[in-house]
Image 1 (tube, rainbow, N blue to C red):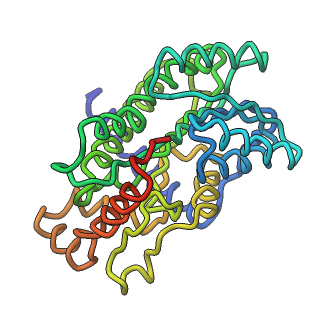
Image 2: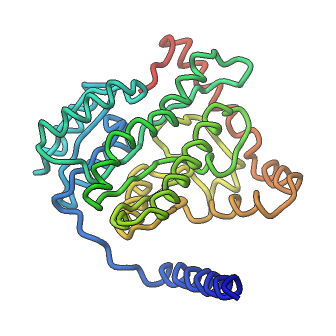
Amino acid sequence: MIFLMDLQMMMLDVVYFILRSCLRIVLRPRTKPIDGELVLITCSGGALGRLFALEFSKHGAEVVLWDINGDANEETAKMVRARGGQAHAYTVDVTNREEVYRTADQVRKDVGRDVTYLVNNAGVVAGERLLDCPDTMVERTLKVNCHALFWTVKAFLPQMKANNHGHIITIASVLGLFSTACVEDYCASKFAAVGFHESLAHELLTEEDVDGVKTTLVCPYVVDTGMFDGCRIREEVELILPPLEPLYCVQQAMNAILIDQPLVCIPRITYLPFLARALFPWESNVATYRFMGSDQCMYPFIESMRKKRAANGPIKAA
């Protein structure tokens, strides 16, 4: 009897949340204020990280900027301050857990309070086919895109839980929900990032007295930052699915963060291949990939990366 009652309540909850999500597409929920929050952003010297810093600052948040590239990171801090915001820049290698923990303690001492929002934005890609890719580049991708999530969350989540207030944002990728050829290192790391984030979200939901700690998983399509320079799908399809403008991507992510949305795919059309992967036979998805040109879309990107390496030497991950 108890089982049947629980089953009925579960089904009602499922219908309710489906209807609520549909309604939110038409009627946008009220956004939460974030003025006064302390937001830490990794890879803040890069294109997306810099835009996240400016957007959070625009909403009144104080930002802590972490990047391995000190010069680029300081430039972001200057841009935030020039717009009247507060920024604290630190040069950090997020793959080094001791450095992450040490700098996290330093942030608390310098700023005088706990980080309340954590934006795990750091990401790299090798840009080589699997058998041509040096082992060190594979390891680097996994360390930056996946392992670093563990170290940053372990550094800041305890205080969020103690205060029952916080928000963890993981910038993953649609390639963490479905894959394509020749970016095995990137897809593996982003699938891991998605799994890490979802498991963490479930863990927080099962615990008592931490309902004030929220999570948002952001899965954008290819963003026009140069990271996947040369990546192209079929010309006709690209008319409706072009590379994302960085500012648009960050604004859509912010919209989701400010309403505590658990998952956002950018653009919305990328929910379709995610669903198709689960519902359709493997061969059906392969046929769709071939039609769209997605099966070989990374070939021009790999060639572009090889030319850059030949001209400039090995490209350092940031």
